[in-house]
Length: 290
Image: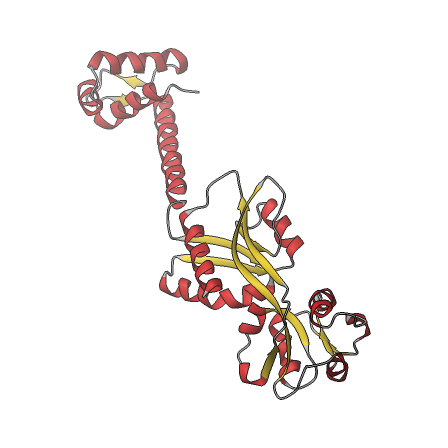
């Protein structure tokens, strides 16, 4: 690799047209600049025709000057990328469960409206996919409903999310038979969530597997639509219920022994979050805790 000090002296000589002016521009002696150029010529051949005024570069000297300019441009691009890590502009990649994602999504859109230079790439996914996506550096930030044990991740508890039994407004849920008559609106995690919550609220009952199915959806944003229309009940995290627009058409059964998940934000532990990621994280915390 070419000595950067020698290359700097040569570039100054090419731009200034004389050893004197090059030395003045660099704050060096003329002898130092001359020595640096001589070292380069020993390695690459004649670079400068010294008899001409101003000095003239040989073909090899022109090639070396192009190389010096390319290095300078590459250095400028590198510095720009480093500065972006402290910028509020650029992309933030985020992957979350659907329930919390539904609640924070409007707040993130509002953040982008206020700051057009910010771009948020947001994906909804189950816990295990969130975990792997952050570990594989596909997303910078993730939300989990459990604390990860992988030492490559840094995890911070930011909110709590209870499970809720949601039924149509105007119906009653007092006994197990009420659930049987309503029927269950299922989803990918529905039976597991139902078993956790119903075993506390209705101890001794046969469990969610015995409840009649009245529908299924793998889209958490659509899950409460059949409930609002009176087709059955479901069990889902509170943030998904809060994101539903027609709250006057649904009701929540108050459980004496709630099931509460802690939400953990995760990112790779080896490097600090860019400033814009921290900005998005603060918005998420504010949305989930108010």
